[in-house]
Length: 211
Image 1 (tube, one colour):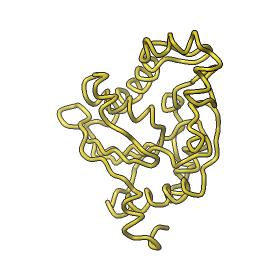
Image 2 (tube, one colour):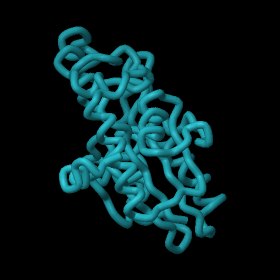
Image 3 (cartoon, one colour):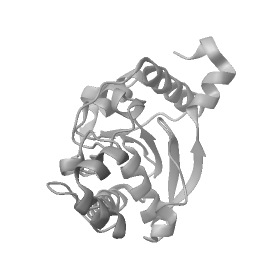
């Protein structure tokens, strides 16, 4: 199995530095260009996916479409949704501290395991993402299929953590910008990181050639 995981393009919420997960926020013009650049990258890699997956959020569906793929053919899986931030949705780090000082301190004291009120913890996110990829490996790991997943930053961090044995050090040891593209392949029944691409670099290099 050959796997590509792409984070969605920049959204309006990203430009405001909001913590958000379940909220639908539209792609910005830059986010649209990032998605087109990701599509160009995948085309240049000669990566023709046999299976498409995305989350329930509009930003991943729109990114997939702008990449040049038929979103109607994608399998939507809620395990690929971003972390639900509960009462912290659509607020900046500073705003959370001002409005919820007590829970803000509790959150920062145990960032991986604390769930914002009405939301979910980073650990919960990790385990549902892990479940998705474990199932994918069980079903397709021995095949030569190419699989494309369009999802979110927290999901990509969780996937990378799973690929690296579940260490939280791995979670914080990498950064996935908008439309960052992570490639992994199954080796010995495990997903192993193969490459990390930045489509914006391709966009800068080829400019008008971006679809």
